[in-house]
Amino acid sequence: MFERLARQMWHQIEPVNAVLYLAPEALEEAAALGYDVGTRWPSYFAWRAAPLGSVGPKLVAAAFYSFSPSMIARHVPGIWATAAPSQVLRARLRAVDRAFRALPGELTDLGEAAELAIRAAESIEFAHRPLAAANLELPWPQEPHLALWQAYAVLREHRGDGHLTALQSVGLDGCEALVSFASIGAAPVDAFDGRGWSAEEWAAARERLAGRGLTDAQGVATPAGRALREQVERITDELAAQPWRALGAAGAERLAHLNRPLLGAVFESGMLPPASTLGIGKVQVPA
Image 1 (spheres, helix red, strand yellow):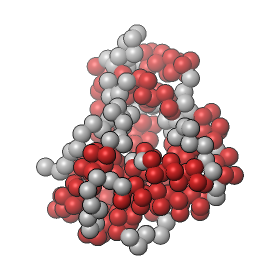
Image 2 (tube, helix red, strand yellow):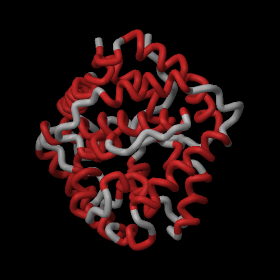
Image 3 (cartoon, one colour):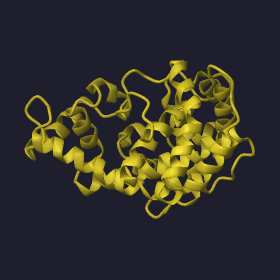
Image 4 (tube, helix red, strand yellow):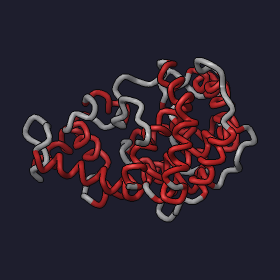
């Protein structure tokens, strides 16, 4: 039950959390810090890694996993020469504040939603979950909409950290994880270009998967490859269930209800890409 609920709540949380990485207001805040916003990646790595502190490329690559380590090394630790993590953390809350206020419709009272999301976030088991733990250590903002977003960041990274465990448990490295995801048609191959893997690295990963009987010569998943992806998602849901078990089905359903106008506004804004590398294509709410 709670594994299914974890998946449903992820579909609620992920698009709202993504505002930081996609909203034009976030690019403006990044530019004000001094980041090159001709590409989204310098600010993306800064926004997402800042809770970890002034860390180097190896730790970021370990935590981000499906990004090419060589791509990460082009940006980290240089991003900290542009702005210290403490500056980035302040700016990302300004970015979220501005982005939420720019969404279609009015920003309704989110106090109860924030309380529920914080309760779920504070219940997480954070062993082997570095990004979730780092976000949880940050102080809660006073404004309800910012506290809600930060709780979503904790829960989103909690699921993401667990997803990496699932990928490793079935023997998929960072590039193979993307190739196998593309092989089931979750997103077009070119949607993964931003992760920084070269054509040669992608082809080598595809060859390794074909050698395991997981894809055919064209890179399309075999029945075994689809079964492996289903196993990954099942493990991910199991590892993500704990905060929703702590909040309870009624609490999660209430949070989804309170979140629905905000989620709808995010979709209505048009900022979400048509092809998500996360496989989220529509609003889903708990049944």
